[in-house]
Image (spheres, one colour):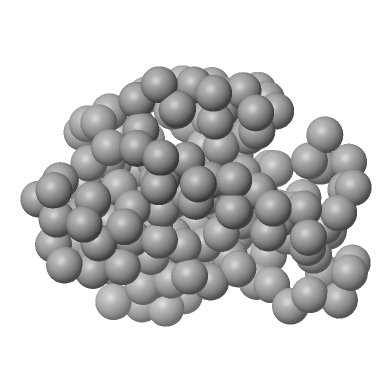
Length: 179
């Protein structure tokens, strides 16, 4: 397994070769664009973040949707990324981007392997958060996403989404990337 990040072009090629639809690729590009803006806003505020990791992790975050559109796409995506020898840092982004993260009890209920599925690093948090602000390929307010998810996800997941939102606001404040 290499720790070298694929280029943007290679990441897009990986998505196509894995069987991701044009819509998933457009979504991933939009998430990557927003996540990169957030990461750069962090840098401008003196916060250390790996912008390249954010960009590539965001591009590949939904690779599991080439096989399933259920919540399990995070696990499937991590397996695909591992089989391709992608860096562990990218695999963690893929595995931890769903909702505001999946807690241990929820993961067990889903039948997932014992692991951590809540974003830990700033890069993981940025990608997870940017994903919540993109519906299809367009930006939407966090309130819209949370309202939509509130109908089908448990209160702890919704609480983690709000917590992630508050954390991102605390980092980048009134950055126009969040508007």
